[in-house]
Length: 59
Image: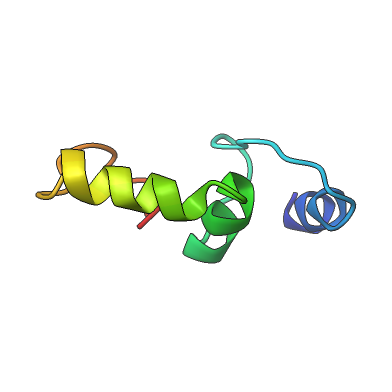
């Protein structure tokens, strides 16, 4: 699954494969580009205690 995911993302594809491929922090950053900076800023502003999505490993 990881090999297929890496191949698809190398071609510009995006998917949120929560059920098949464990995503790294780098994967999440690529997934949310080009909005990553704004996404991180919003997370820090609205969820400074990291209550939301604690198990996803996005940040």
